[in-house]
Amino acid sequence: MNKLLILISFVFSLSALGSLTDFNREWVSHLEQKATVVSDIRHLPYSFVHPTKTKYSIIVTHGLFESPYYMTGIGQSLYYEGYNVLSVLLPGHWEKDLKSIDHISAIEWKKELDKTIELASMIGEKIILIGHSTGGLLSLEPMIEHDERIAAAVLLAPAIKISKKVKFAASLGKMFNIDINKLTDNLPDGYDVPYVSASGSDLVQNSIERILGQNKKERILHYQKIRKPIFLIYPEADLVIDNGEYENLINSVNAEMRVKIFSRQTGVDHASISKTAIDTYIGFPTYFNHEAGEMVREMVRFIREL
Image (cartoon, rainbow, N blue to C red; front, side):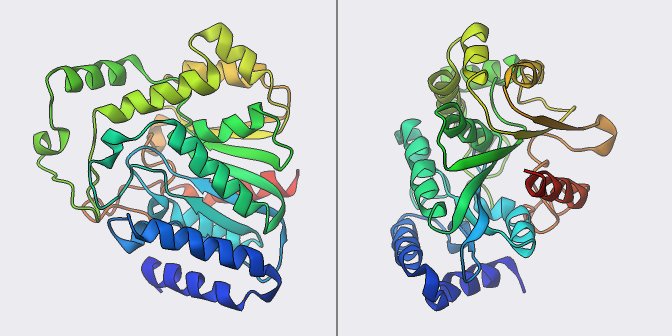
């Protein structure tokens, strides 16, 4: 069964969930709203939901310029392990207005995750947040705010500090109005090729400063507020994030910190870390984390040991 059929089957299966009637109604309403703006149905948020509440419900949040579609493998695997799973489609991503990301504010991302947390609380006793890159950064905020509904987080290369190279490239792009899609001969199509906006980096930076502060001292103070377990997973070969900042996170959190690092030899990088074999771009069918299976098994062990 391909991913689109999986999405459709789970959307329609919600109508059969008698014990989750309130969630069913709210989720369908949420999907209907998203369907009015999404560029293609495959980028809609997915839900993998059992007939009853589970001990943990899981929220999967994607990174910049991506969508839930590119993290389906993780969500599907955790559903098969017995958890209810929801995903987030961040505003400005894969919309009919392909350049909508240029017209949103970073606070809209927080509101979208907050909305999904409300939904997840209806299908799980506690919530596990799983986020990649920007999604990982956003997943830290409820933990810093001591949201009691959150039990733990799994962070995949969270965007807690953008590398100097990426900041420089983004500033050049804005200064000279460079169209990255034209430069790479990959025009956005609303289906498989995203609109790569120079303003995307600004939105992430705005989110970093809002959630963690504007300097190292402020970031550490915010990390110290975290009192729920974190499983941090990141690649040694990451050109997007300043990996040195992870040490500050690891040394500051007042809770269990489990860490997994993919070495350069694995070929895993910032964008591929969250992708399984079913999450690839059409033009790059082999670009995924070839060790994703073991990574998900380690996620499951982390969750079961909470």
